[in-house]
Each structure stands twice: as structure tokens, then as C-alpha cells.
Image 1 (cartoon, rainbow, N blue to C red):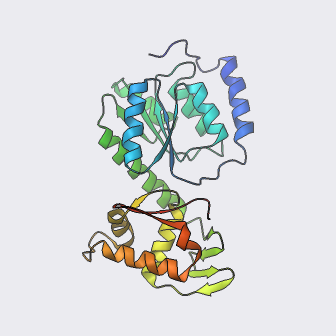
Image 2: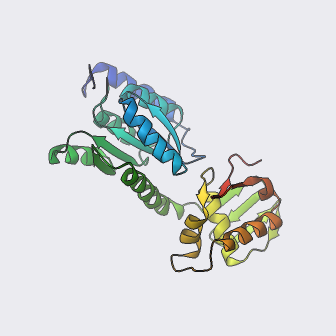
Image 3: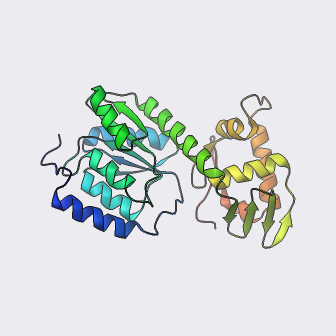
Length: 260
């Protein structure tokens, strides 16, 4: 239960917003797929963290709006699961502050609330939330919405990133050129797509099924063994990936961050 919330216009919020804007500048460099859970009910926070963790996401938690703003300023997450009713600074104000800062304005936000009224949903969406779930909700649905929102966000920003780097490896996604230590490396079309996908999702545990779906396409029926073969070829052609791509037993792969 939220207690003693500060409302919009409260001097403490204004001071906090100014400090937030100063601290956040220059820190928006995502390294792994991290989800910040802002929820003052520890049982709900545990539930969300457990399901997201099983889905391969890294999670962090904040129990109040003020704590959340501090965490975001210190290290911006890749996605925010934000409860509406929070102590001190409520979810709407957290959303407003995040959206009001250029460096954090693009962080995807899923808002949670015990209120199911249409007016509450509209208020959250109009102030900048990307999605909305009313309590009680299905944890599996939340995980699905997190994945869908991240996919939409990544598709929207992927085109803007033309060059990807990982240790000595450089990938020109526009010209399909790969080099290692300044020397060009020849990859097949699927090897290139797999490498690009791993680089764009570094730090995440990626299942073989997910890689087949997103790299080979839904209609591919060759089996998951083809993923292992292509990973082996990437490790052979790009020695930095021998240690960079970690095999997650009975699940899939992860490109570690930072590069070894």
C-alpha cells in the first residue's frame, strides 16, 4: 500500500527531476537486456522477477518511485515494469520524469495497476506508458508483453545502427562487411544474420528455438542442430567468439558482455 505520496508540483519532485536530468546525461549505453521492476509489494515483485528471470532477462527492483528514479539515473534499464501506486513518487510521475529526459525518453514502459478504470489506463498511456496491465495479471502474459515490446523497440532502432563492434570484430550492417582485427572475414548470409542477431542481443540467453524463429524464419523445419553448426562456424571464423559465445546447456547461447 502506497503511503505519503508526493504529487506533481511538489518541491521535492522538482529538485529530484533536476538531479535526475544531470546524472542521466551520457549514461544511456545499454549492455544487456535489463528490466527494472518498480513495485512496492515484495510478493508481486518476486513473482515478476522470477518469471522474467526464467525467460532469460536480468532484473533489478525498486520499491518506491524515488528509488526507481535513482536507479534509472545511475544505470538506465532496457525496459521498465512500473506500478502505478508507489510510495513518495507515484508511477505516473516516474513515467513523466523518464519521458521528459532526452536520454531516457525511449525506454519502453509497461505500467501495472490495481485500478481497472478506463480513465486510469488512459492517463498512463497519455503520459507515456507503452503498455498497460491491470492486477491481477498472468505472469506469462507479462513476459509475452515484455518480449513483444522489446521486439518493437529493437526493430524501430535497428536501422539507425549501421556498425556493430565486439572486441576486434566490426560489422557493417549496411554493406554486409565483417572484419576481425582489420582483416575482412567472409561469412555466409545466415552466418552474417546470426552474428548480427547475437550482437544486437548481447548479454541475453537466447534459446535455439528463438534463434530459429528470428534468424531462419517461422517456416524453417531443419531442426535446432543447424543453430549449433552455424555457431561453430562463427567461432572458427572469428576467434574472439570462441570465448564470447557461451553455450547454455540444454537451452541455447549467450554472447557475453563485455567482450572477453
